[in-house]
Length: 385
Image 1 (cartoon, rainbow, N blue to C red):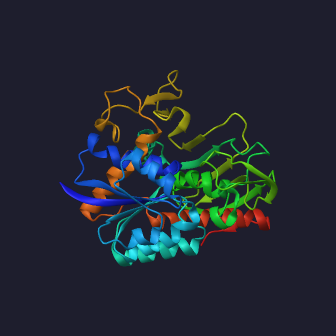
Image 2: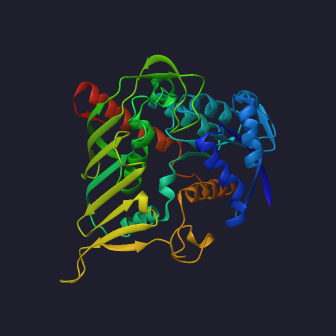
Image 3: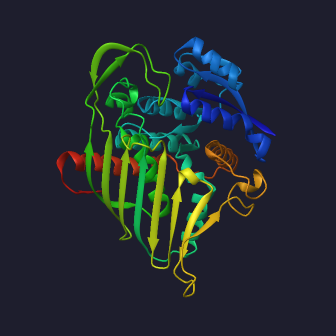
């Protein structure tokens, strides 16, 4: 089997999720390429060494530029905060590395478009990790829509609700700094909803939105926090939150469908509630990440007295990716989506075919997110060219 060396840059929440997939992919899936976990890179040498030892990375480095320049590295996995996606991706593409990049793609649409153009010019495979596309139940919904089982799509209704920033004493992490994160709930979680809507319904034509920052100042932390959802130790000083805590959008799709999006980190009781409903002329589907192995389906063609939403347990071997895992009705979880992404990514490298979502998808998604924030600021509907 052909081998390609992987370097991961970033070692917190996403670094763990990605490493788990790189480490285990060949145990479950027949892939044409064996990934070799060569280098883990992060700024804190002690922490990145502990990460590498735990997850099986052969070496460590503290300077991402040195990693990208290495001739023995074939794949760059970008698991950093968004501000570093653009410089790392550009450098990686120019040195001929294939790129596996976390979302959101970048801080701006200009950066996203440049990332796409440089990667295409270099002829490398570029993948943007919106992992929820690769839930078998979501892929089943896509299949059913493509087969016409929902008919003409009229409505998308999506929300992504979390609650981890409700505590006013939660310290000012990078997620709340525009210069590092780009945006708050918009890029952090609404980007997932927008990607799913584009994947399942189509491109978005116009956006009207409202956004809100509920807590405008937070305690400054000593050093860095322990990762996503983790507060740091306060210095006693306060710093300004420069991104939104919540955003609500109403959109029109190019195919005429209407849609709504709500994303917030202030929904008490909701830890990671990623939910959507799609309604068409012939049927409807509902997905809830908290029950990620299930898809709710309503068929308007059922007979009288038999109509109603049915639950499809998307764990049959006929469902996407499932045949590599367990027997029917043995559920899979959040971490499996990353395995599915790595599986498709390695096959794309081997075949030379593009993978989706890629950097161009990231660019189109970023246009929607930027339009939403622009609309919220100007209080006007924004048409997306």
